[in-house]
Length: 190
Image (cartoon, rainbow, N blue to C red; front, side):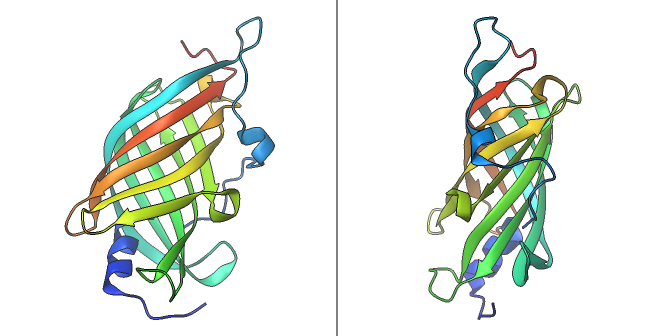
């Protein structure tokens, strides 16, 4: 798909990152939070975080469409059950001349790595009900939901979901972000 990219859309693309889905499964059945078992092996717990990110537009082509825009990002976040963590994300955007800023959300894949090396993986797409709402007048946004698709260590087999809300710097290249949701895992979450 081709189209004219507005200045606001370009700023958003610089600020946000597009990816093909992660190699772990992203079926909606697996994305449903698990229920705590009688033995307590699976726990559902709140998942919250606050941090900051930075991003750059990397290339054209993602989600099977060479005209989609692909961007990468990274950040640092203090998140429940992982502590101070690093995260990375990849966003996919589609040109849309009917959208207020000239682009629409296609997908996001990402991972967060905690201080002890445990990781959580997530994915969300417009086809799965994920989306993004920008308030460019106030430089804020809301994205998601994103579904956990597994992890490592305590988060092996993790499920659940989260939303991300945040603010953009005036240059649109950095921002702050808050995460809120639930995570379920067969690991030893306390």
